[in-house]
Length: 114
Length: 113
Image (tube, rainbow over all chains, first blue to last red; front, side):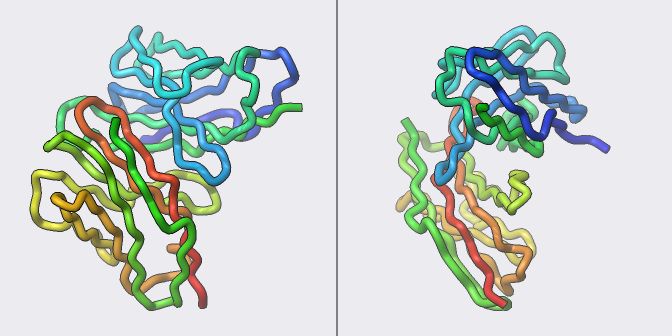
């Protein structure tokens, strides 16, 4: 089955700790995205990548880092510099070929701070 | 910068009835795409319907249809014959040039049996 997987489903972070959220897709999509969702708010873009070895900051990149070494994978690291990391994190992917470039989403990871 | 506004934080509808969710957006671009996504309690984001701005015909997907008013920058979602499984948070989203999506704040839809 083609799709987007995110792991883990739940993640706990201690103060001062870096944690990495996994996102993998087998849809052969070029572009991948990371969003943060807080209660009562819409999704906010953290980082996105349209091609391997290249990525751009979104609206709330501070305290986060990403890499794109493989087309299928786009891991997100929440660093200790992110002072309020508790949120729901969604990964998405899309083709880059003009047109609507519809984004399809993974099931999400909930990050909680201990 | 583009903004997307959903003015109805919560809506409710009786099962089998019709409900309309509102969305307005602000843009200076002429070519863009609009989307409605559904987020059920599982929190998985599911594409409901999309509309290309250059198309005058409103998009339809089974019980879901949109009323796209380009001049008014309005993009409402109509759900006909509402079902219990339609209960979810609904997000309107905009994509202009580039790949970035801009989301509204969402409308929580309750379906009453």
